[in-house]
Image 1 (cartoon, each protein chain N blue to C red):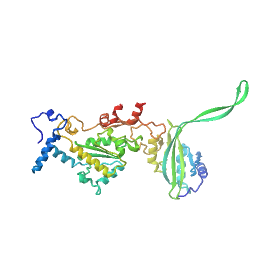
Image 2 (spheres, rainbow over the protein chains, first blue to last red):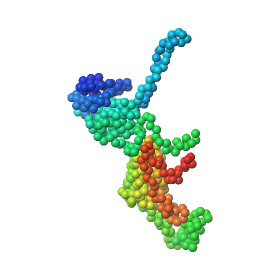
Image 3 (cartoon, rainbow over the protein chains, first blue to last red):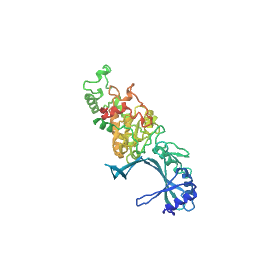
Image 4 (cartoon, one colour):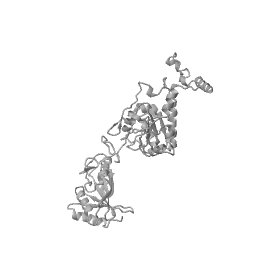
Length: 201
Length: 229
């Protein structure tokens, strides 16, 4: 396996040129591995994926891994300099402004080419939020190997994959309503040692 | 026969709290008769001797402990020496269920159902850290924190996984337990008490956890931590 024959920027441009309307952005990876990934928009993700699979040079014919990440709502606080009237004198003061960044669920696909022996190329898809708009297009029609792993992401993270042929829970039972790999998941307290600790307090 | 039919049930229970069969003068009598070449036994001894030497386990394994269990039955450790070589493929023919490995919450109802399907007298060995407490996966959302939450366990084996010698030791412990059981008296085992249950409720799959999270009657009976509730 060697690195992909095209740079991540070239892949991004190729998708944008060949898939009309697609907007791709690069998510940089600052670590020494420098495995930057491509963030696709949900609407054109299937077309972009098909383009990558059928591309003459890339031929990303194998999705080796599909996983998910839960990004919680975050609060960005930045210090802004504002002109303020203090005791009748206009002075420069610092003010912290807090902006809420809504969280999202992210699906990550690691693609390789068995034919051209290269990889990985990493794709990301993001949901609009973590609560009610958690739909993403399924890439199972493009790569069959994503089927069970998308079911796993559906089970443990609650991402709903539109277009998946058989979207059922894969690990937990069907009556289960939680998504245990989400960061705000609270497991049931059925641990008698824990209960003893609570009673002691 | 050791029982005097003229004695009532309460009189048979001697003031020392001993079952009549355990009374020292009877053991002494048996030994004395043996010296004259007369072999005596009791129905109870015969019954227990037969049972303890033909405990047939269920063909049932869950995780890495099952590999040790399989090794125990093979030539090197040879569980057959203790009369337990016939692993039965059906719970209807099994006397012992060795819970060998991690019990996930999804699997727990099935284990309880297998246990319910076994005929009395039946025994449970919880093998390994996971089966007795959840082990290293205790904090996991999907792992049952010990099978003793739903079914009564006779022998617990710690270890991760326990070596075959540990399983053999547990098996001998179980045999000793069977040999010490009385067929009459208040301390007779569950399968000889008509009003004691031989089946336990199978937990259901709930929205957040198993429903109920433990069978409080079974769990509290064997759990030293029950006092906290």
